[in-house]
Amino acid sequence: MIDAVREDPSPSDPALARAALRRNWLRLILESRTRDLEQLCLAHPEPHDPHVLLIRACCRELLGDSHGATFLRGQGMRIADDDFVVCFTELLLAADTPTKATIADRAREALTECGPDDDYPSALFLLGWTEVRLRRDLSGAIGLLRSASDEARLRGRPETYRLAQSNLAFALTHAGLFTDAEQTLDALPVSSSPSDWDIFEGGLPQANRGTIAYWRGDYDDAIAHLEQVVDEGGPGTNFEALARLYLVMSIIALRREDRYFAAAGLLHGVSKDDKHGIPWDTLRRVISALLAHAEGHDDRARTIAAPVLARPGAAVAHAVLAELYRVLEEPASAAQALRLATSGALPRYARASTLVTAAALRSLAGHGADAHEQLDRALESAAPERILTPFLSDDLLIGDLLIAHAHRGSRHDEFLGTILERRGELARRRTGIFTPRESEVLAYLRTTMTAEEISTRLGVAYPTVKTHISSIYRKLGVTSRREAVLNVDARSGIRHRHAAPPA
Image (cartoon, rainbow, N blue to C red):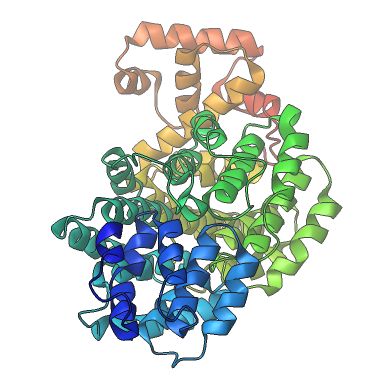
C-alpha cells in the first residue's frame, strides 16, 4: 500500500498529494508504516502544510519522540478544530483526560461526516481505543471496537483487525467480562513483526490475562503472566505499567515479603503523570499505599494515599483504596473513597470490591442485616465471572462475615463454598500442614454442611471425609469444628474478635 501512495500520479499537485495522504495516514500508522509515512510527509509538495505537520506529530509520538511531537503539533494547529485530521491527531496526542474526552466527542461528529478522503475503519478503531482509555463508557467502547473489527475484516485490513480485537479484549477485561475477554484473547491473531503500536499496545494480551487471574484469585498465574510484560526500562505507561501494578498487588496478596523491596522499585517506574487519559499517579499511589501497609508502615500508607481522596475518575483505584482505609480503621476516609468509586459505572470486580467493603463497614457500625445484604449483592456481582479477590482478604472481619454468611445460608452457597475453599488454600500455603483434600474439607467445615453433605459435594465416601476431619483436628490439636476454623485462621493471620460469628 505504501508503494501505491508513493506512486500517486500527481505528487506535485499539493491538493491531490494532500488528499492521498489524508486517505492513508491513519492506516499507515496502524499498519506500523510510521517511518514510511513520515518520509511521505517530508516529500510532500508542501511539507509545512498544517495537515502534514499534524500527521508528522503523530509519527514522532509513535517513534518515541514526544518533544518533537509537541512542537510539530503546535505548528500544525492552525486549522479549525472540527477538521477530521485535527480530531484524530488530537485523539492520539492529547495527554490529559478532560481534553481527550472533549476531542472524542468532536471525533464522533467527524465520523458521521466522513468523506471519500477520510479513513473510516481506522478512525472508528481510534475512537474505540480512546473510549477504552477514558473509561467513561466501556460498553460503548466495546461496541465501537466490535464495529471497527467488522469494518477491518470486511475491507481486508488484518492489522487493523488485530488491533481492534486486542483492544476489544482489553475493554472486555476491564468491564469485568472475563469469559468474553478470554475467548477474544484465545482467538487473537498474532502479529508477524514488531509493531510501532507497541508503544501503546506492548504486552496487552499477557497483561489482560494477568489482570483476569488476579481478580479470580489465581495469584501465581497472575504473576507468571505479568512478569512476561514487565520491562524495568519501559516508559511507565500503558500495559507495561498496568502489569507492574497488578504484579505488585499479586505479590502482596500472596504475602511474598521477599519480593516487597523489588515491588517498590517497580512502582517507582510507573509514570507520575496522566497519559492518554489514564490517571497513572493515582493508580501508583494507591498500590504504593497498599504495599506500605503490607510492610507494616501504616502512617506512610496514609501519607501516600491522602491526595487520591481529592482526585475523581479512577473507580477501580478508589475501590481498592476504600478497602485499604477500612483495614486502617479510618471509616470516614473509606466512605469517601467508596463515594468516588461508585460515582459512575463500575466493572463487576470493582463493584464486588465496593460491596464487600460496604458490608464490612456496616458490620462495624452494628448493622448486621445490612452487612449481609451487601455481602450477598457482592456475591451476586462476582459469581458469574468467578471473581474471588474481593473476598480473599485475610482481615479478620471479612473472614468472620463470610463464615456467618455461610451459616445464615445464601442464594450463592456454591460460589461461597468456592471462596471458602480458596481461602483455605491460601491458609494452607501459610501453614503448610494440610493435604489438598484436607484443605477442601476444611473449607466446608466453615459452613453448616454435615460430614455426609460434604462427602456428597466432594464426591468421596463418607468414612473418608470423617478420616480427613479427624486428621485436621489432630494436626491442629483441637477437638471441634469451631476450634479448627479458629485455629487455622489464627495461623494465617486472621484474628477473631467474637466468640461466635457476627449476626
